[in-house]
Image (tube, rainbow, N blue to C red; front, side, top):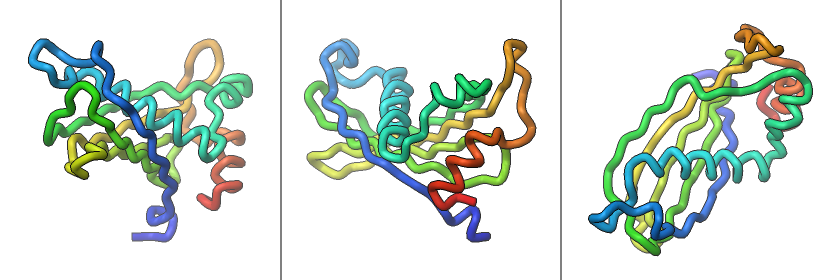
Length: 145
């Protein structure tokens, strides 16, 4: 494995499970894990100053084009979920995040997942095949060259 692939950054979000996220069985409805991934990305962005709006104002959006989720256990109302979000360092023009969600009280693995985002530019939302300068600068500032 190259040093480029070994370099990564991560952040942890702490989420208290809300009543409206649970199904009639009292467990978190599976679709809500996508929202937990989003909260993980937001915690990551705050920690490392990865500002999607700055990229947008410089002409690039970063839609998710792939989502993978593996469920291992359930969460219930009032549980605390710890969402660890790790960015894979890749030379490609995309952002890949890996997620590990654990139950804070038990430490048990609840869910693992991955999202892949690409860069699109302009009003036509054209796929960018090269890393945009704003993201290249961010990578350099965070030691991910």
